[in-house]
Amino acid sequence: MARLYLFRGFLARRIGGGAENWPRSRAAIVRQGTAGAVEWRALSHALRIDAADGRPLAARLFPAGRPRAAVAVASAMGVPQRHYAAFAEWLAKGGFTALTFDYRGVGGSAVALRGDRATLHEWGEQDLEGALRFLARRLPGLPRLLVAHSVGGQIAGLAPESEKLAGLVFVASSNGWWGHFRGPARAALIAAWYAGLPLLTCALGYAPLSLIGGEDLPAGIAREWVAWGRRREYVLSYARDRPAACYGRITAPLLSFAFTDDGYAPVAGVAAMTAAYPRARATLREVRPEDAGGPVGHFGFFRERFKATLWRETAAFLGAAR
Image (tube, rainbow, N blue to C red; front, side):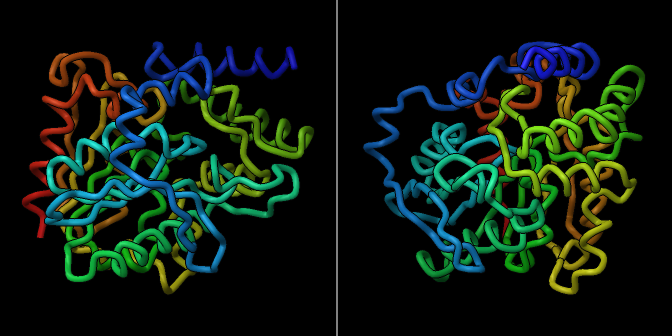
């Protein structure tokens, strides 16, 4: 165990510059987005939705009184849906019925950690696809939108229903190839992709993402993530052989946020991931801490302190997307 934390410390020193990038625990991530949990429970309800392949997923619906659109919120790697509760509740108050959900292997959708055969591509092809289908059935006729954090934006093109979205917002969604990083951060990511993560996953039988603030994940998810991260095309190295993938067919407006203080998702990586959607009407928004009203990092966007800045900009974009 001591070696695991030494590896975490190595990555933190090389990649993450501050607390926003390296929360000390899973609970720290959750607390960033869930002030007012009692009110959250009152204004939303938990449910089970089916992934496209029928696997049950834990989800929570935040209904708007008179909804003008339906928004799916796709989580970051190993981050439970609770992290997005305050943001989803705020969207609902603004007229957007919002759905959060846990991917297979995460939070309320997790089963036996070592026995789960989940893969990363299934998060897009099956889980996100199931969430978007659920919204289509639940709110027929309303525009469907996507707010995707980190890996959520990477896998959006794997869900065929994404082609029908009226608009997308990516929050720190980066191509994870190590070449988009510079200096010590590049060395740290190479070490993670070629040694640290595969060796730890093999030794433990699961991926210990709790060391960097997320949840531990099934080994198959980590193995595929590592394979993508070693390739310049990243997720497209998988998607190019999948006819159902729709990266090149999405034509909706796309707002892609990159934060200059984000140690996980450098601006170059976010730009590369945005370019993976070549027909989307994309805007790459590079945000400095002084523009946002404080440090954002990789996880901070969903903190309530950004209601008046980042959240308001996002809601305006979603409201205009058609």
